[in-house]
Image (cartoon, rainbow, N blue to C red):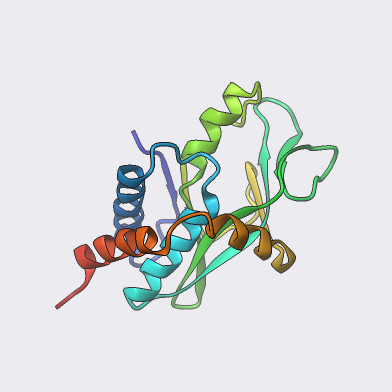
Amino acid sequence: VLKLFIMKNICNYSQIEEIVNHTMNELQNQFYHLHGTCYLIGHCLNMIFNDLGYTSQKVTGHLHLKRHNIEKYLSYGTKINKSISIGYFHTWCEVLIGDQSILIDPSLRFNKPFLKLMGYKVSKLLPGTLITTSKNGYHWIYKKDTDLEKLSKTELKRISESQINKIVSTVVRQFRIT
């Protein structure tokens, strides 16, 4: 069951949710393991939302996830408050709806089981897919850092452009209004 955290006051949230779900299905059809592919997920979502007429951007920076039952974090990027470093960067997508920036991060559904295998538990209240207007929640902290974008781009170069375009065009075709 896909857990979503969605701010209900956002217009078009159901369409955003549907686009994200279709994107994740296409990515899972193309790749066996999606843990550690936030750079790919954020990039594809950005391309899809832009192709569908939304204003969106791929964002790379720091992600801090609250650990289960303790007041410490697991950090992708720079550590905070004696957190444990688990990665160098994190990438997500942001979509502009009206005057609100919507943060979209479905990669958490792959990170959570991987972290558990590594012996780390995050809060059970952290959803597998995050769709929110809040970059700072009780269970997460997202912080943009343009200096980390080069790391995301380096990882993305490992994926063929034709494979990315196939995923994007398949999802866009499902939602494009003719």
